[in-house]
Length: 630
Image (tube, rainbow, N blue to C red; front, side, top):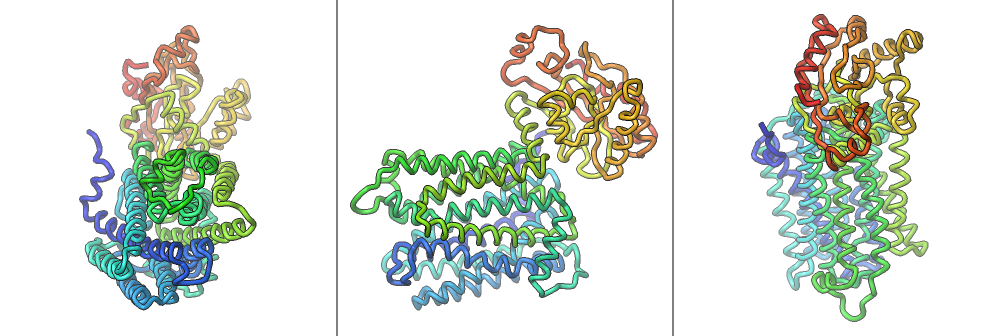
């Protein structure tokens, strides 16, 4: 039976009111900020003597300053108090801030508007930990990627619509400023109404004593998060995305005006295309990931951010500067080279969605639930620091004479360096990427009862052994890392050896060949199971040379004698005859017999209690799962 798609969450009270509350918050943030940036870019002389390029980098910096100062406190509040009530408090605060902004608009008072920018930063700082800690409380594990995807889509659609409406409203003569003031207050009130429908979300740590020392608490938050290496590096990856996005998006107003020779509608067009890209990429994550937390998409997204960020620089070189009045969006789209620029902006957004959604889901699933909000708060601190650094770098580079297209190229190159560094520290990202590429390009894999692979806790997986890529196919199907027990000779192969060493596979040898290595393998397996890992073994001990399942050795019985954990039988179907199997068929025939994308299946059986495990019984279960399809 097919599972409901991610949009079905929008019909359920546990998700829909929360979605519309955060959507309207993102919409209002950008309705206000974009109107202010447009006004100060295209009508600067009547408001300030500062240069437009400085203003477009300064306003985002002021908005995120509260993230640095108050995120630690916000995380504690979100862990201590019930989340729906805290959300309503934040929405009341938004209404008050928008009233201050309205007064600033109507009296033409810039310092009141700047105060409101900082105030909306405080609003977003308080809501951030609530937002991402709420989802894992209300959604099932297999809904988390879809829920995050819809949330990110809603955030960026809200950003998009807010930017469009903000840019359009504020330039309307003679009442644009009044329209802007009324609209922001009205949207804040709608968000408040939606927040009253959010169901209760109990506090995970109601006994927590809130520390108001934001500096000390910020360090404690980050120190706690660093204990979980994968989570902390995922937080850094998330923050890097916001560095990248802040550096690129902050340049769009001046890029549209000075490089594309467009009016404010061109700025809106660039934001529209980028936001559509992020929204579509976020939604595609559920389909591409198979409804599980697939961090293999993160390197895929990072590659796209570098490739299309660099191409945006080269595409910008082909734009011939126009003379005369600034062109509107429709006129500019007829100019040579403009479609290439729009495609680059769209794909930067789309690959950004592939990058950010799995990182959010990974953090939500692998951090301590009682510390969830404070972990998100720690991430928001890092995000803020990275975004402030992005604004600072942009100001410095532009001051040194760099052009905005050159800034795009620098950002793309920096992204490549940072990605390589992070993936070298956490090889799991790269491993999952290789596995994901394998099963989405060379093969079409059907998963049968894959939800029987546990999301947490130790277990032994046993499977038939057909080819050298068995482990990669199984690893790609699992929602979490697997420690594979592999023949020690595989580690000597050039590419596969590196892959399995990187995946922390456990080498094993027959007792008659290397008794020390065999005993060490059992010790390593027991240690991995003690730490709560999944361990996968191939009880046949070698690849099949006939396509039939060989006798299961007694190693699995020895494992469960030491570690009383369930054993989960699995069966691979369709790999016999693969280029990397031991089929006797002609190599060229094996390469082309199944076509460009061969069909495979992985069937997962019900867990077997440790006291019921026997090699013969497991072989029967694997045979039954495999059936006649080799």
